[in-house]
Length: 207
Image 1 (cartoon, rainbow, N blue to C red):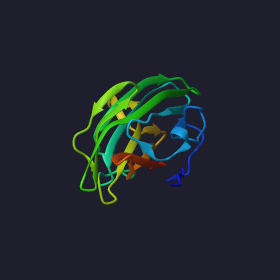
Image 2 (cartoon, helix red, strand yellow):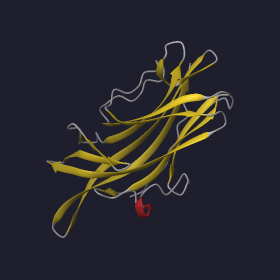
Image 3 (cartoon, helix red, strand yellow):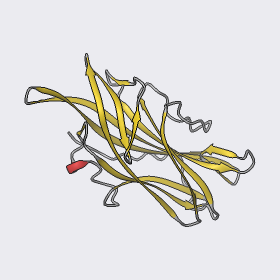
Image 4 (cartoon, rainbow, N blue to C red):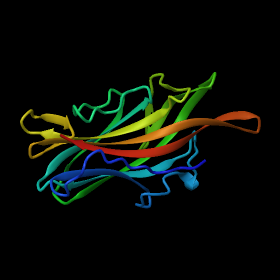
């Protein structure tokens, strides 16, 4: 099965006053994301990534990475209205980032428990950075597969709260990543095991 990294840029980025989220493999390369370079991720296999945000805003930023998990019937973020996805939040990472600093977050994850019934795969438990997260009945079936949605949020001084995206002059800009997991099945020693293929997408918009 072929794995590919596809990048979609929704708008032209200015190199000044920007924040850049991205995901790297444990060796700090934008490649070889999967264990043994195999895009079929089996239940219990560990994937080691770094999530990162580069601050080019010209000042200190309070940033939060919000990680969501949903199937592909759940809407992604709405760039035109700067609305986050309604997918359930799994975990969050928050930190002040100095200007011209890059914040890296280890993201070590595995599907620790998944079930399969009538062609529908349900992720029951995820482990992220040695913490277990229980999911609430989302299934991947008939092409409606899983997706990690990784959103960048920042502090808005006017509202005194975190906002999806950030303000750059008169623009409200948003950036998010989508990593899709495609359930498939294989037989080994007469038993059925779950495995998942992945693709990654990157989005940015401003208005």
